[in-house]
Length: 260
Ligand SMILES: [Zn+2]
Image (cartoon, rainbow, N blue to C red; front, top):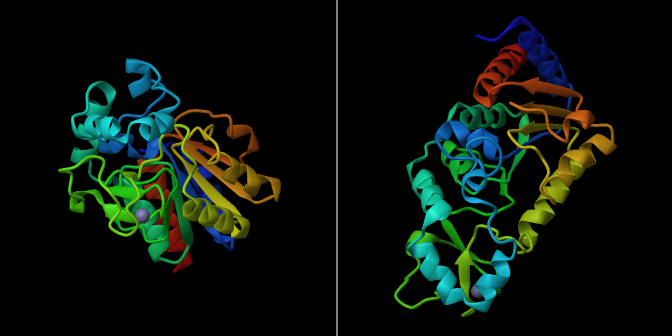
């Protein structure tokens, strides 16, 4: 049950959304927790449990791509836990609510920091996976992406069928630049955006954190949906505290009925 205060705030959010021209969403780990995917930081977080991973993952990959692939194919510790969770996860109400918001023409794009493929599986079309997608591999030379399941793994590291470059998981490692195509789309969408829903992310990891701030700087509307207060809260027009599933479902229902 939504409490009275939250109901009022959702009403406000609906007004803001309906008066905007180019609504976007940016999502993070919080939106997938209800799909069984553990967050990295905070209570129950993988890194809280296992410690922070090395911050030079991309350098380690470049130094020894074969070893990095071997580790990926027989993961241990936090990677093992994460792969298992990813393989078992299903999209939840929050992912579906964003699909509905796109279907009715309100939501123009989603930037996600998640690699879990759940927005895509739920049916989001205009989707920018800024940290990649765990079901894909990407050539570090020509950047083409191929479904991981289609890549022969007899010889490691696998090579790009197009340019013979080394294939790497599409998920962006620490120290790895964000793929240019994804970043360019983020900038283009953010430039048009006058209302951004920031869902389940504390928005501290750059460059993703820069997008909501850019919207706020040009006096656009920022609506935060998060269980906890974040560093972004002070810049938000409205902060809705609670589970993104409850809030997004109520919000999208209300947007849908008000538009008719
Ligand atoms: Zn290539």
